[in-house]
Length: 108
Image 1 (tube, rainbow, N blue to C red):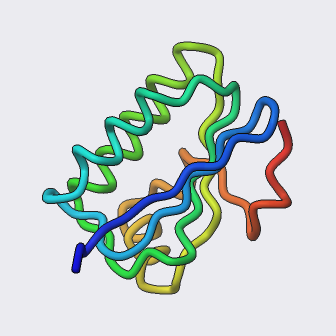
Image 2 (cartoon, helix red, strand yellow; image 1 turned 60 degrees about the vertical axis):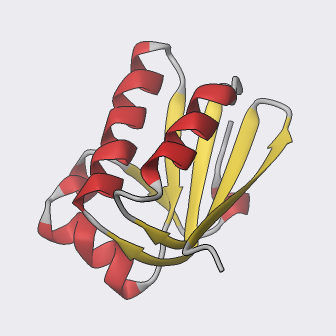
């Protein structure tokens, strides 16, 4: 069984990428590939089913935000579990990233 998985749904200008399992250095290539593939103006990462996030996963998210920003696109994160959110809090990246509570709260 894979420790990481993702599923993407597109709806107009929004691509929602739902992440499951563990986003670590073994999984980042799959996420990076999907982030390169999507072309929508707003990319939302749904972290609610993510069990683990390490520094490699965090770096991938931050680099994606920078790339999308340079293309006049947005990255929005759907808040994950307490453990996942803790990674953003202790690294003070909550101040640099856009978070919402649920996918339906993402505006395009």
